[in-house]
Length: 458
Image 1 (cartoon, helix red, strand yellow):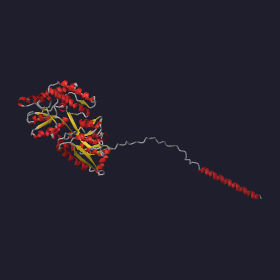
Image 2 (cartoon, helix red, strand yellow):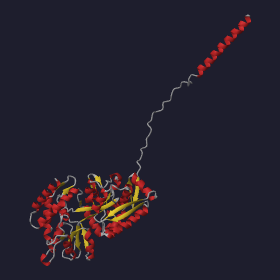
Image 3 (cartoon, one colour):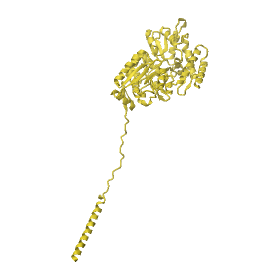
Image 4 (tube, one colour):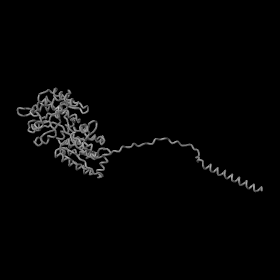
């Protein structure tokens, strides 16, 4: 019996020992592994070097000019090149037939380069009214072009779209400052400029041996040639607000300020400029008819040595067989320089266009492509406002375009505000009153200013 108890006790003790060993093993395996203690090596803390991200630049080449464009314009250009789009944009113009033919040929080059975009050039008489009527019913062309003085009226409604979102500083830097000023209204860019016009001095080389470089020299020519008894006059000059503006601006005057929306017709500076014109130019005119046709005819028939006119009369002068030179109006002094009004041809974007990016791409290509602008100058006589063409050596071989380009550089773009419509009439009436001796310069301009202010006040 004693041996049985001993066996039982041994079994119990063995079980207890086994349980203890298993517990110890479980306890040990549940503890984290301890790494022997070592003296840590301290690694200096460094700030990772961050490489600045270079903004992606999207570039397109128009003729010989490569310019930075916006992403959306770049993308539509790539799609058009690869025929991934198929759109047609309508472009309204109102020009002489031969001018439209030149532009139509240029458009063919655009379509060859961007086959995904077709441009339908449409001649439109009465374009301004037709455009506004079409826009009112949600239609109209994608693009149209005319002189910049329509901008304010179109923008105030609006019937056109500001283009700032499609433009980069690189694009804007390609145009001359006066063209950008003409494209601007209410601190936005509303159109892309491609040509300009203003008045300049055109002299008959058979009658004028030396082109005048200053007003004194011009005055001497007028005095020497002026002989009403022999039906000869000192100069041909159309007398209207646009033509006479040069002299008001020369002395710091103006008819209307776009920024302040205020007229300046009777400012001392304006009065001084208009008086200068009457005392130093008007006295040498044929005063029986101061209109365009009569004054031009005097020059064409050799009855005046020079005429102040725009590029629109060059064809008639050439057809008359006259050898002539075009030069800016001569300066009165180093600080007093005649600055005529100018008109800048813009391309506007219709707010109803369903293909705005494609239309803007064409407008950029047309206005920034130096080869296009050169061709327009060479074949149609359009005066460039693209810097690259104004710096082009070949421009000097186009003396008429070159002469008018120089005149445009010193010109002042006509006001774009629709309120300018209240100014032209009263100023025209004032000049008529002065011509007829009914009022003095001061009286006529004071009355015109009062009329304009009354109209502006509603």
